[in-house]
Length: 217
Image 1 (cartoon, one colour):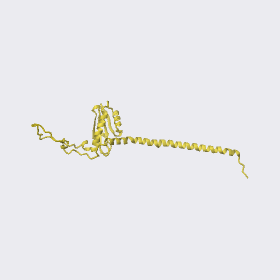
Image 2 (cartoon, one colour):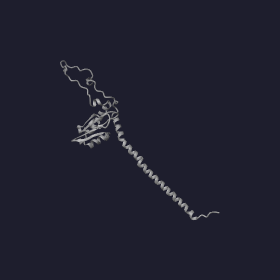
Image 3 (cartoon, one colour):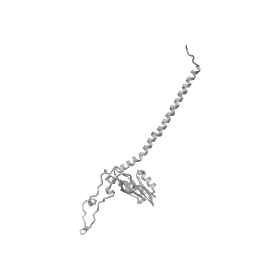
Image 4 (cartoon, one colour):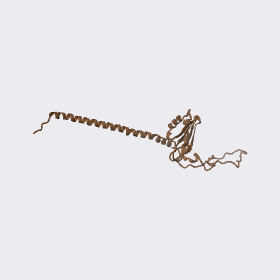
């Protein structure tokens, strides 16, 4: 014997099923959108920000390598051994008769330096330092009114990052700055004074390790 079934119940069942499926679909879409938004905020975007933050340091290291690419390896510095190395070589010139002078007995011989960049910087640093001096001095040469902001902008354009620029301050018409260019165990730094056509950039010696401070260079 069949159990009687209400026709109204049968008619309502498909609508209830469709409503349940619709709610499930909407819930799935909401969860998917939420997941996509979260991935956008914490995933690719964070990765992009992290990469952008690392670019200046990588570009700075690449610039240092490019400037020093034709320089010798980081060999230990060698002080001059005597005055003979500074004298020109080649055949002696013949002087007219009677023009030969006897050098005085108390003539002072050149003394090899015992401190400073000449003896404390290795060969690679010395070579690279000359190139850094030239490129920076040339860029600052035509700068009118060399304010710290303008000097920093030029240094940044040349590839020197803010983390390596120290003591940037103005006194009168001169803006002073230091650059920490230590790389591969070297001790190179630069001491610069931007004064238009009187700009001077010189090598200096930084501590072998630890933070860079202009007072302890």
